[in-house]
Length: 64
Image (cartoon, rainbow, N blue to C red; front, side):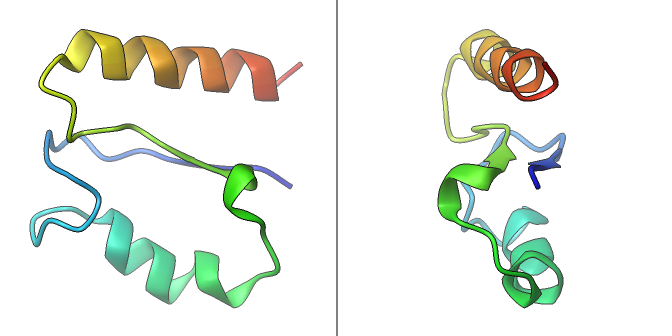
C-alpha cells in the first residue's frame, strides 16, 4: 500500500498550518506503513516547482 498525501500549503511538514501532521496522527499512524510508503508534497522547499516535480515523479513511479 502506498499513501499519497496532498496539501496545498507551502510550509514544512510540522508547521501548524499544514494538514500532514494531523493526517498522520489521525490516519496514517493507525495502519502498518513504512515511511517509504507515504509520500507528501515537500512544502518546505522554497522552490515550489521542484516540490511539484518530485511529487509528480513519486506519483508516476508508484502508480506503475
